[in-house]
Image (cartoon, rainbow, N blue to C red; front, side, top):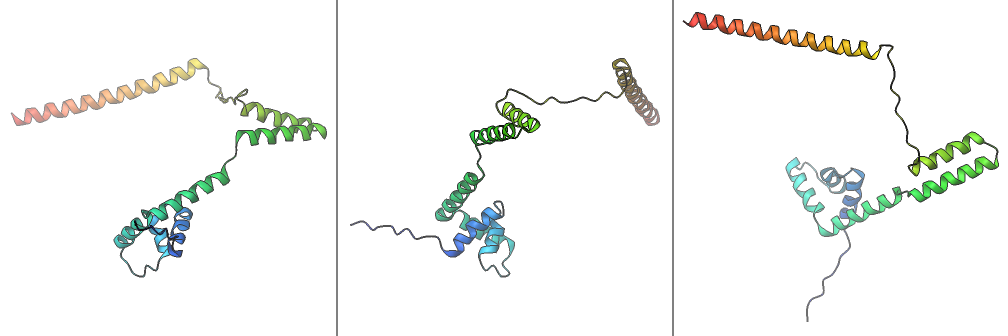
Length: 165
C-alpha cells in the first residue's frame, strides 16, 4: 500500500515570510530577516536561506495566492467605471448641475475612445522661418567649430610628422 503524502500547512515563519515578501515588493532577503531569527548571519547566508525558503513549493504557492488576492482587490473593470460615470451624470442631471453632467459624459466618451485629449503646442512668438534660420545658424556654427578643430588636429599631426623626420 503506497504511503500517503501528508500535506502540512505552512509553518508560522513560512507564513510570515510570504507576507513579508509581498510587503517588501519581492525582497526575499528582507522577508527572511523579518520572519526568522537571523542573529549575526553573514549576508551570503541570509541570501541563500531566503532563496531556499522562497523556492519551497508551499511558500511559493502561498506567495502566488497573495499576489492574486492583491490583484483582485485592486482590479476595477471598465464596466464599473462606466457605471459610476453614468450614475454621476444622472445625479448631476437630476440636480441641475450641467457642468458636472458634462464632465461625467466626457469621461464616458473618453473611456469609450470617442474623444481623445489633444496636446497643446505653445508658440514662442518666432515665425517658422525665423526658427528654421536659428537652427540652421546653430548647425553652421557647430560645423565651423568641428572643421576648425579638425584643421587644428591636422596641423598638429603635420608638425609632429616634420619633427620626426
